[in-house]
Length: 155
Image 1 (cartoon, one colour):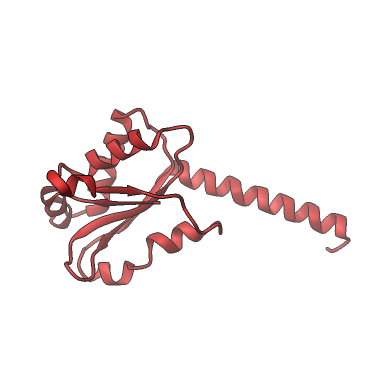
Image 2 (spheres, rainbow, N blue to C red; image 1 turned 180 degrees about the vertical axis):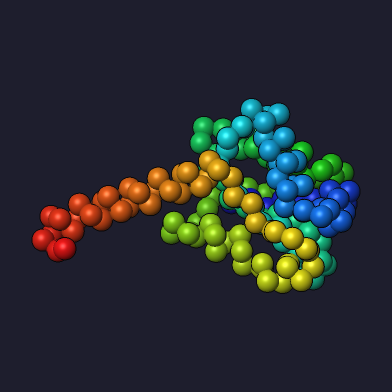
């Protein structure tokens, strides 16, 4: 999972864009492509901080064999340039701790209602590679469940 603080310029460009999610999606994909991360399974939600109202992103990604440093650089580029101490806290990537298949969805949507009062438009982006990964996971679960039911004698 990750959290990404946006520069003032990127935040303003997001808030005043007619399609904030699409704006950030394009910036994120451009940065991922530039750093050799094309096709990285990723999802994010635009979130407003409850105290300050600052807009940032929360998301999840599947890093595969890519290094954390390369991913952090790409995310930071997508978030816009920050200076000094802010730059060191711009991007935070941590291992995902909720093992459930929909845990990432719970994580990125926890403040969705609050944010929707401050930011117009769609707030959630889910990449096609992540959708495919999730679908294949469920197909495996269903196949495993069907096999388990067959061997247990249950219909």
